[in-house]
Length: 357
Ligand code: SAH
Image 1 (tube, rainbow, N blue to C red):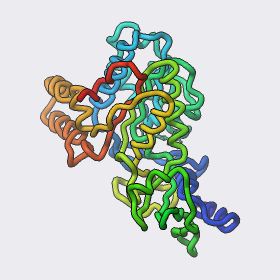
Image 2 (image 1 turned 180 degrees about the horizontal axis):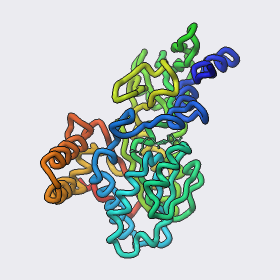
Image 3 (image 1 turned 135 degrees about the vertical axis):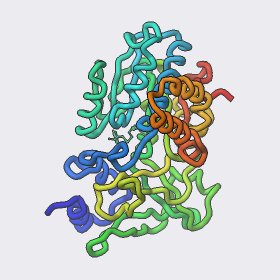
């Protein structure tokens, strides 16, 4: 049988060890064997549960934050509402429901979804059947218009490279074949300009990650916001500056070896929020401080929304689940502090909702 492992082993045998980014891209997006091409990835039945799948409150609050920015910026029409990596389409659907009462907003919006997986596109089409939406391959194809953008757990799926500090240079960690397994190989140390600034805060032997596509993704989004206005809300697993080996595989809600059975587990790495801010600034936009997801949702009024939904809970079991979902999204020991949020906005626009200090 031709598994993804066979394909990757053959490739390595022909062309030598591959970067972790190449390995990760193949595992996630290979057109035949990629994880997002094949698996039922989300929800209790899938491998992991994301914030919008935990509670409708997540999408509603993010939708209202975007609506507030749209009003603050003079209700531009037409405007683009875009999401990258929309999964099952739940976040977009909850955002649109929350936006409906805002006069003129839904009519002004041209809704675009950036999604690589055909299977998930079909699922999104189903979820959003009441709306006119269209799909894009990459953020580069977004129209040139005011851009109201959201991405949750999208940037952590972008492939990363890993480097180990050796003196004033870096050895890259590559994927090699080792019999019927994969293992890590190290390159000879060499300078790597993109990580020059990390020589100041790392020591010999430290691992630092670099996401080569992140600057392209962020500059496309920030460039549109700088030229046309808008707001981007980015929520993800990560921190300010990447530190250490955060490459991980999850299957069936459990961590697994990322090199065993490629294509069958979700692969992610922590997002470096400083890298987002650096690119956004270079494009002439501003970023908010990075805040924890818990604080962000509190500022957006999750407690009030939770109380109001609680009054409509049909039975004690639903009520119990509702309380657990609120806690899961916000509590520091759950998703509340592991996940972070940052916003990209035009210079001169008011501070986006949820980021007031
Ligand atoms: N935002 C959703 C899903 C997160 S999973 C949620 O919160 O539930 C990651 C999503 O990004 C999936 O929809 C996956 O198919 C998509 N994706 C991953 N890499 C991508 C890429 N390079 N281009 C476009 N979509 C990508």
